Length: 199
Image 1 (cartoon, helix red, strand yellow):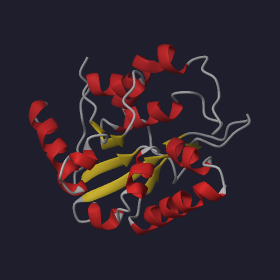
Image 2 (tube, rainbow, N blue to C red):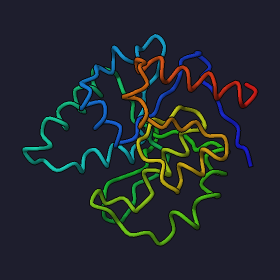
Image 3 (tube, rainbow, N blue to C red):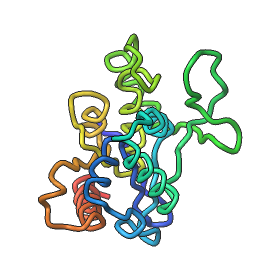
Image 4 (spheres, helix red, strand yellow):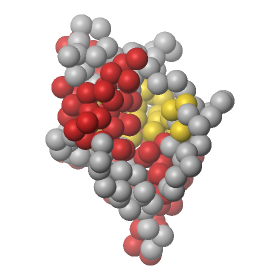
């Protein structure tokens, strides 16, 4: 089943960043605000990725990475996407945002979660971030129907399901050797995927 992609009304390209991509951006020492300028792109992370980033250990070898991520999120105005919901009573970080914070889940996002829930979400173990396994990828997959998701991890799971059903999932593994700046890499993928979807 192909699910519809919803482009932004302001003609900016929405980009959602997987937690693993921050390692690549850090290694390349990219200035995200320069690479994906605000007059062409709108940048996001889902709340679940924000939780994964917060779970990066506060140890000496990770300190520079965490500082880089915080600085880039602020400088590039990366917005956190919260799905509307109410506080949970259980342990772990809050995933949903209340009024004036969270947004309603779209019909396409609900259909996507229906596709992956039983196989990839139900009964999964909890990770170090206190998210269940695949929870972050599920949020990214849902976002891929309104945003280009940048990832380094296209293993079988929610992201490959999203890709097979019309989501925009951009594999960042070839980026180092592509000979393109990040804006060109993302734009080329976005334009090609829009043409292949007839949009």
